[in-house]
Length: 123
Image 1 (tube, rainbow, N blue to C red):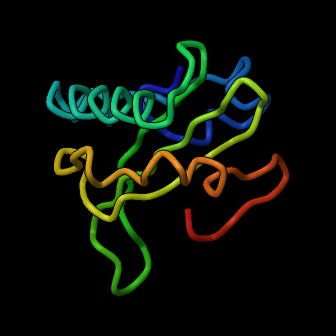
Image 2 (image 1 turned 30 degrees about the vertical axis):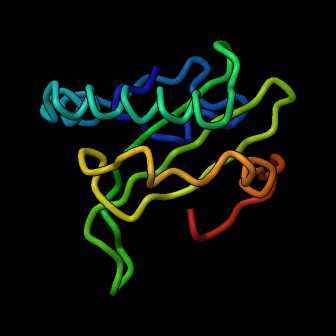
């Protein structure tokens, strides 16, 4: 499992047999317990908000924005449901600042879905 919280690991076949680079592992460990606690909170809120099954995979990561005009840090949340559909969205604030009200409403779950093979530049 990718300790950095990188959402790419939820793609089908990603991560099988793949090893995490030493730098990525060290970077994840440098973030400290606050980062991992915040990630766990957001993961729990996501599971509850979208009524996900315990077996549904959820990935939460914080990324540095590269586009001008974007917040410097963004939180990316991705989850897969039992039918294999990938859902994802961004919160335009650092992971530690995310609160439950930042997550989309439950009725938007279907709109967040992206079939495999379809990629978008926004998330």
